[in-house]
Image (cartoon, rainbow over all chains, first blue to last red; front, side, top):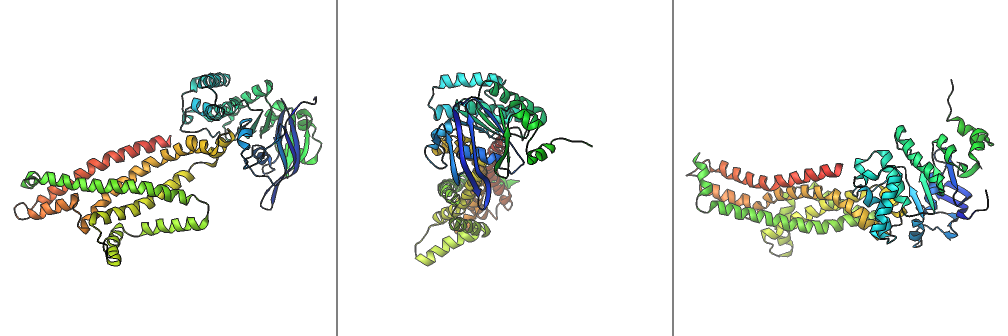
Length: 249
Length: 223
């Protein structure tokens, strides 16, 4: 990997809930075009890390930078920074009272003040890309989980973010829908979208990642190329974790 | 059978409709005031301060626990006794209905907002919306959608509860009905049946469409 420009720089990040240390002096950088997959046992702090990157959580130490600009919870500058960070959640969180098209165009129209014509065209092109152009005027309640999640991805993409944060986006989906959503994400990776992905789909993680980061107990235990990590993990903890995904009698 | 004639004798029907108008006027004024005050109560209840929360809770529970009739008497007789201000019946009725209605609306408003998942706020914020934009486009429309059917339901309950105010001498529809029945007690002994049937029909014609509307909106909300 060359010395590409950094999109995200996390330096000595500390996150606590009361006395509970969730992220302990964690440092990590993500370069432009890179796909970083965060894995680890539940409660290891992966989702919290993504939330800190978007200023949804106050942090107790260290810094999070987007293009060298600090991401600070509760600061007015956050509104500008969040436009550059797309975030997709496990529970889709489409706005139930708006059609698919309105869900997608709300933010570019109101936050970025783009023209309705351009935004609508952009939205339809993105919907087509994820195979949902015929659902533009449907309401979220009329869509399957996989369709909703694809719309949620488009809703973030249309803001032209510098980085996409995907927080267990297939965890609430039926198995047959996981595939359609992850295919969209693979497409994004191929087209050079910078992403940080939290997932429990190991086969997908291996396919999509440029770099795998294994978190446990709020620290990075191991990181490396997906092939090495999944087939030849160096640390004992990673080995133990990966064993929980294989079965034998 | 001849009892039905009572309804059409003289201006009896007109008097009943006049009474119905009193019922509706009291209800509408009280519902309007309840909405305005209730939204404030609901907003205050969403404040995180535990003391403020507790005070609101106590207000709502006290209003709920006591029968509306008791409130009506406390206000109508109690205020006069305490302050010497001579409240007329309609005013006392509106005060009672508003104290009750505002507490119910307040609780509904609180519930409508707490029912919106935390993630709706977060996904809105993560799209770069400001607080004001978030509430304008995402939160308020959803809360109002949730509220409207419940407010309509409450309105039908308030319309029915106005019947109590006949007990403090307000001549609303029920009181008019009683007057008509009493005046015809000897000539038409079964007039009561017909008069009450007419009043039943009047309440029904007002409340049933509201009930249907509320049910339709609830169904829509459930989608």
